[in-house]
Amino acid sequence: MTTLWGGRFSQRPDPLAARFTHSIGFDQRLWDADITGSIAWARAICRAGLLTEAERDRLIEGLEAVRAEWASGTFVIHPDDEDIHTANERRLGEIIGKDLAGKLHTGRSRNDQVVTDVRLWLRDVSRRLRDALIDLQKAAIERAEAGMDVLMPGYTHLQRAQPVRFALWMMAYFWMWQRDRERLDDLMRRADLCPLGAGALAGNPFSVDRHALAEDLGFPDITQNAMDTVSDRDFILEFLSWAAILGVHLSRLAADLTLWCTAEFGFVTLSDKHSTGSSLMPQKKNPDTLELLRGKAGRLIGDLTALLTVVKGLPLTYNSDLQEDKERLFDAADTLMAALPLAAAVLREMTIHPDRMAAALSDDLLATDLADYLVRKGMPFRESHHVVGRVVRRAEELGIPLSQLPLSELQAISPLFDQDVKDVWDFERSVERRRSAGGTARAAIEVQIAQARKLVEE
Image (cartoon, rainbow, N blue to C red; front, side, top):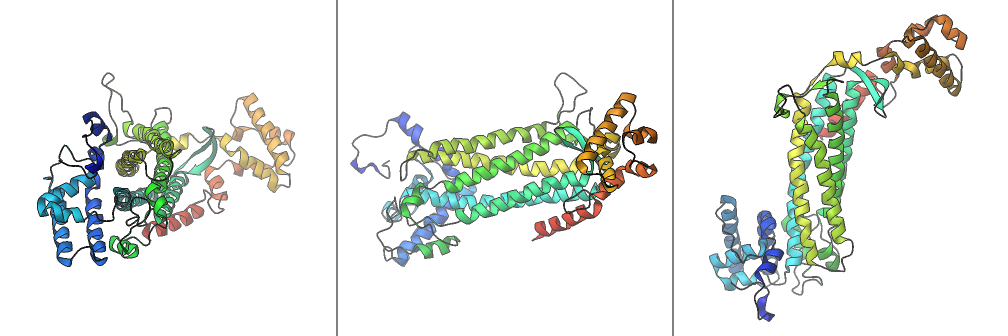
């Protein structure tokens, strides 16, 4: 079989080199996008007067036959197929004849063809990832509403800090994922542009209407510079950056929940469906799904780092180094297509234990409330902070909880303490005081949830 480019060569490629350079092993998944782009190209060069309408229709008929073979799983890859473009054109020639099939590539390069395929593929997968992300956000809203009455410690530095509602913790992840969704929408504005017609690097000599091409393919606009078009992989880098950030957010969720699954915390129990056992210890219930969600962040970061390293020193324009983009892109998309539904299922099916969360609430979490009490009595906060620090130290010296420290002891530290100080030692009162926007009071969280529901239902 002759290659698409072999006219000036007197020797066939070394078999080792061929195996090393061929990309059909992974870019075959672009088959549908490649055929869609080729059909649009057939129409474009017909409009430019390079094909008759009969030739155009025969090309499109043949391309649809190739598509049907891929869809049915009957397409057979030939050992000489370098990539998805070669494979589809070879098969098209077998179906409608090589002479007519050979006209399809007029004015087109694999340089603009492949980037068109990838942008089409990415547009489709991004829509599916967006839907999966929205479902994860919905799962967070459901758990937040169900856990509104559950109080638990909030943490900084992994040390108990202040009492919060479980719903506040859950909604924190909703807003992380909302930023992820906005970033995806934003990057797709730049990714959803039509490269076809840029040629190898200098443009098309046959007066092909690129704007009509963009319309045929559902792109809102075209890329603006032919050299940039064929060498640009920013849109993939943006996607990989987005994927890495989302992966980190999933990892943080997993880090919280794996900790909370331990006997030492006991805040949650994972569903058996998302746990595994030990091959040695019969009692074990391991949070493997969460641990792998956490571990996949490293994989996603690696995909981004790998492609950044590939493109960092490339001269304009196209270089075969860019063949390395697709495996990284496919890996990131596949990883998230698996991870997002799993994360949603984990949230929906885990059991939370309000009693264990309540048992973890201790008086020291109300130390800030005690300082605020003194502020309301007229003491500057910096002074009240210092005073309450002395109160905490005195309670530790006596070996008693803060709430059990006698009024006489408190007044020995500050005369502003009075009988009403007992009202401080109420966790529900504490969370309800924090009713500013974004706070842990019920009304503040209800506002968040209403905003969140509006965003996922748009």
